[in-house]
Length: 229
Image 1 (cartoon, one colour):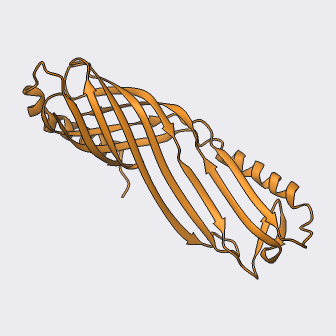
Image 2 (cartoon, helix red, strand yellow):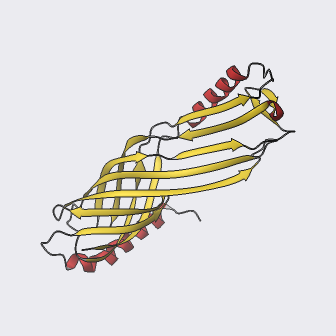
Image 3 (cartoon, one colour):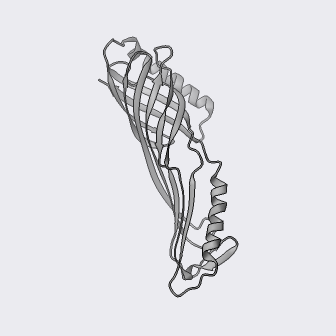
């Protein structure tokens, strides 16, 4: 089910309302909060502490993995996998000393999409317009990977460590991931010539890199339920 900007704003408003009783009971003590989260980056954990009524620090982690087998418009079966994994440190600014916050931080983005061809005696794989029987190849795989520490900017509702008790949070933002790295690996079987396989695979890899070059932003949307001590 697609989520619109209006749905996000409604969720943030709801979180702010739910957080209001806890905020009203805020005291001068320092609290440490922990939350279970779920969103576009998978399931995760947040832990945070407020430095003042206006500034807080959070550590965040989220991960999700899934796979799917299919031919993906080729004559060969592929095992495709997606691994989402993000961990970082966030600085929350509460401009009104309430639930609404603006967040900036640094996140180690380890998201990766990969596919591995399954053995076949009858299929073919095409690289740079040249087809090779899979019986002449021992392996073929490809991946697109984001592997770098990147900035995050977002906003949300809820104050995980604002006061003792339960808290509900909503965060929406963007990871400025930069362009991912694309790689294709293909090996020729012993005794097979596989003419121009190396240059053709390199050309195909360059095409893939060009196709994914613009995937330099990753949306972040997550909700959390936590408790502060």
